Length: 256
Image (cartoon, rainbow, N blue to C red; front, side, top):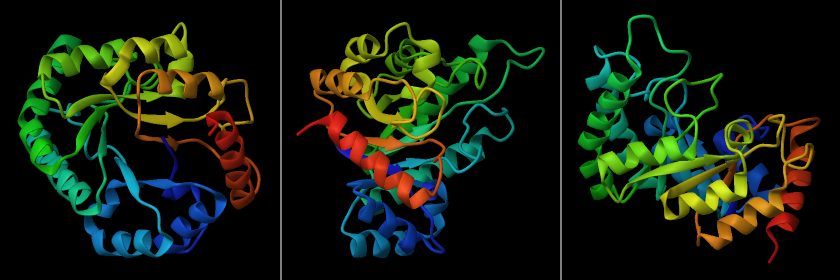
């Protein structure tokens, strides 16, 4: 497992400066955002200079939310294909997918949204296979999304799609709200897990709250997870120093 962090968490005036900061802090990989679709060469050069890979891509805003509304879904599917192509060019193995956000609108049936999401993923799955990229469904907590809240919810969608390139993301912050036992949920999900996000229980950086990251890492080892664990959190204090402290804390939690 490689310790990763989102590029936007690091201080700097350019992509290269931010990635250099993460490498210097002790991170072994980075998570980029979907703005990289339009800046592939800049990211490629910055990653090569820093000597670390990008292993995941997170949507930058809601442009890839596949169930936002029926009228824009075709455009969102096409944008997701572009993101998969950029992931392929940059060697990124996981593209994060959030179908929709917020509460269920009046007059909308949740099952209809789930069906729509499955149909969109079925259209995208062959492209993901060709690109060699996993689309990882991200469950969010009940206060941020009504449709997919637990790993089991995400797995139910992935099972319906039935593609080896559609997986589920385990986000420790959301799991802290929705799962009864985080390590047990990870073990139950097994190889459905295609990516992992880290934040402490209060969404600040790991090591500032009460989440047992050593237990999370133990569960990930038990299922044979070999991807990255990427910071998606708020940094407390000076960002560069907080990143160094967080990396040291997580290296210790992960163990050799």
